Length: 366
View 1: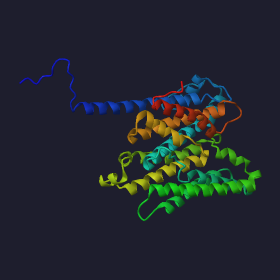
View 2: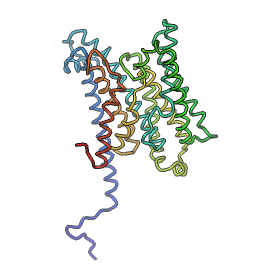
View 3: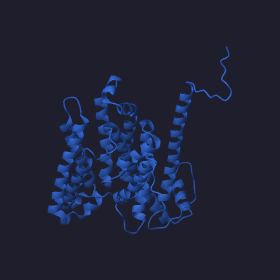
View 4: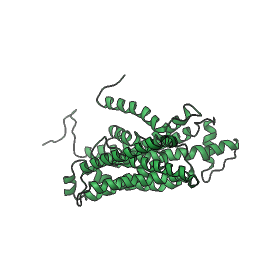
């Protein structure tokens, strides 16, 4: 009996699925490589933006001259090199690290809580950091010789302290109910925000300097701060990424994940600690930058899918690119004045996200 296929008939067999899966993985890898190149280009473009006009070619040559095994004879004013290497570049690196940290933390919280509205500030990081920074500013007014390094320290302590209280209140025996965690975070956040509001009411005439910090800003960034936060953010992102498989399985149901051998409660604790740590480290130096951790991972999920193996690195890259461009706009639109970068992220990101949602539904604004 002849089992050959009739002419014109197309058959689909089992081998087609692996080929499709392999193609899917290749596309994601190519996307990561492309976004990495776009991130490098974004850094170069952002280094040319500011009150001092520096040509793109000059900026590229200055940065390239600092790479190992590359020798370029300087043909630019010495002041250009100082501006690029010690003013703009540390600010750009800080924006990239903070954007990646907030986006990855947001993706981790959204996956862990199975809620697209979750963000890195959900369980008290922002109110705790805000209260800590406000207290640090008041202490600084009393003891000005301490220096501004006190404010990031107090913000970091406040953020971690708030999350520690939320975690303690939400934990029931050896389990950590997600609903209880969210409710405890909302309650503690409201309580800490009320204390901050009281301090502003009572000491408002002294606290004008902290308002800009609360709205987010990168103007005070320097290489020491970049070197300080770099290892913490990289380690936190790596810890979150190596748990992409448990995160994928937990999207179905915690009970099913438990039956498949995943230690759900252990994974919850590790992810919450890692996401909270990188968020606290980021906001302690840059203030409360909204939108990035909420919308970036959700937009990445809509475009490239929910697989956390690729969602996490893609969120890191897109978050870095977005915050670098937002900060460039914050200080480059109306120089020498500077707009709080948190305002720019909301103004630029919200319309794009709304357009993305409408397009996903098959609709369009245009």
